[in-house]
Length: 132
Image (cartoon, rainbow, N blue to C red; front, side):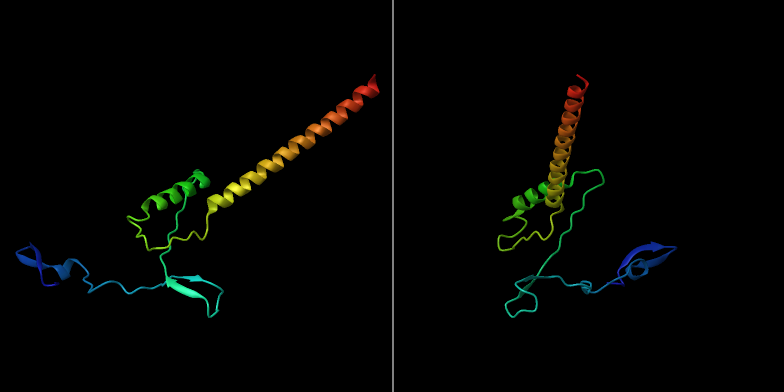
């Protein structure tokens, strides 16, 4: 392959090996990924070859919306681009985590508003009676 002429420059042939690096075959893998089912180091543990897909959101994007859209897209691809016999496992869903933290924050804000309102009601109500 390296001796294939790809052009002429200055009346001399330009060979493929002059302008490109030629490799025979696929690159050797540097990492392997396995997905395990069962307890670690157990005879019942079953490891299978896996593919890891990581999706990151852009700054300013809503993590919950991004995660929901990715999960819906994966569901639509099952049976077509993702073969029916391929198992899809979600190992981390930061959208779910963000939703839980958001709900907890809203709950604590509600408690704070109710607490401050009660405190103001008690304080103003007590002062009004005292001044009368």
